[in-house]
Amino acid sequence: MRRRHRTNEPARWALFGAGGELAAVVLPALIIGLGITLPLGVLSSADRSYAGLAAVATHPLVAAGLCAILGLILWHCCHRAFHFLHDLQLHPPRLVMWAVYGFAVVVPLAAWVLIVT
Amino acid sequence: MSACTGCADRTPPPTNLGKATLRVFRYRPGGLVNGWHDTFEVPYGTNTSVIDALQWIKEHLDPTLAFRASCRMGICGSCGLMIEGRPRLACETFVRTLGSQATIEPLANFAVERDLVVDKQPFLDALRSVRPWVVGDDGTRAAEPGQPAEPAQSVEPGRQTPPQLMKYQDFAQCINCLLCYAACPQAGFERGFLGPAATATAMRYNRDSRDHGAGKRLEVLDTDEGIWPCTFVGACSQVCPKGVDPAAAIQMAKLIAAGRWAKDMVSHG
Amino acid sequence: MAETNRRPLVRKTPRGWFFQNSSSRRYLLRELTALPMAAFAIHLLCGLVALSRGPEVWAAWLAYSRHPLVLAATAIALAATILHAVTWFSLSAAVVKVAPKPVIVGLQVTFALVALGAAVTWLAVMG
Image (cartoon, rainbow over all chains, first blue to last red):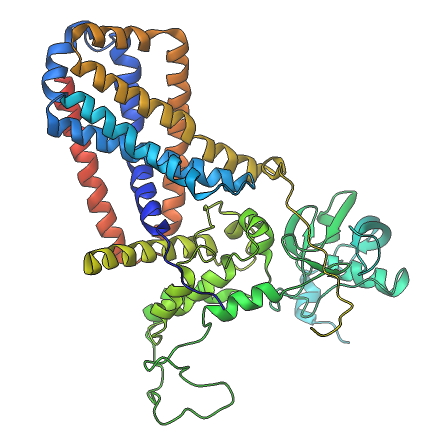
């Protein structure tokens, strides 16, 4: 008989879904805007953009929001990577699960701490 | 047997198209450890299905060939096979559509008992575990088949409006042919995986207005062997001969499980 | 246990199952979009940190972003993200088809708000 053992997969999957939807909606624009046109100075002179950008993006709340968005996208990617291990017929111990998902939490959190300090 | 006159006007008589070569998987318990392939030459025409070809082999070339078939019209779900590597119903696959040397194998992701016959028991256990019947409001079956409903149970007839029927009708088309399991890579790695058809059937009853079993079914769905091995490959829905879309059913179950998880978090802290 | 002559043959999925047919190859590609996307998310987080560390560090991050290899990686990330978006929306369409109304409306409102928030942030940052 199948027994219910509590699994936190629903929560991991919900965050994966949120991150996936976010990535599909905003990531193409972010890559074109911040990854390509900004460094190449297509829209405005990139080196002069510092003051305006820094004033907004380093505000603790704005930075928290940006880190949360990027963190969710990162969570989505880590979730896929973790399940991909299963597709490769590897059965990693729980420690690997903690490391993979932990990465998606620690990296944006560390970025936020570095920004506000 | 008299021919249907209405059809005879439109359907051309079956034409002999020559001989086809079929590579058929063979396995005997206690024989070669991993099975082998036999090659058979089979005469075929415009209307020869793979079942017809296998039956011809059994009658003319090798009476020991074992395979399952029954209705020959895509409704009994017995004749699922890997045909040229893809899970298909043998009754709906015509020999004329196959390549010059088509390989016929038992359904992937199931243990082989003999030749083309697989062990369906893991699926039958999975199906039974999701309570594939209308659960009454006291948690029992509304009516056991072949037995009168007990007085304690609802005696209201289960009337439904067309929209209520439409909510689950697509999922109710499943014929348990197991093509979805053979297409699903996760069913290959995770032998205990509840899988596509059982989840689609669970959702079929969850979405039925007369049913009260959704809570009990969630206890089976929301486990490591329930819906969560699924990574939405989507192959199950692609191969379904009845358009059931079990992949969507599993994602729906995931949404419900996630909602329930959030609710538990709020109520239990 | 009762004695039996059954010896069911269990066949193992080959490790290279991804390459067996075109739909599993597409699945492999879809799952692999996660890697370049993750790399770009980390790259952007680094950019945010650089922004907070003063103009020189920011200029260094911009110069790094202009490096041909980094630009090539960004282009791969863009291609991966577009593939992700296309597959994501076509898969969610399949679910939405059978989802109950409140769930759909809830999700649509949530993501409209998220997209709006992202657009406002975007305008604020670029403006």
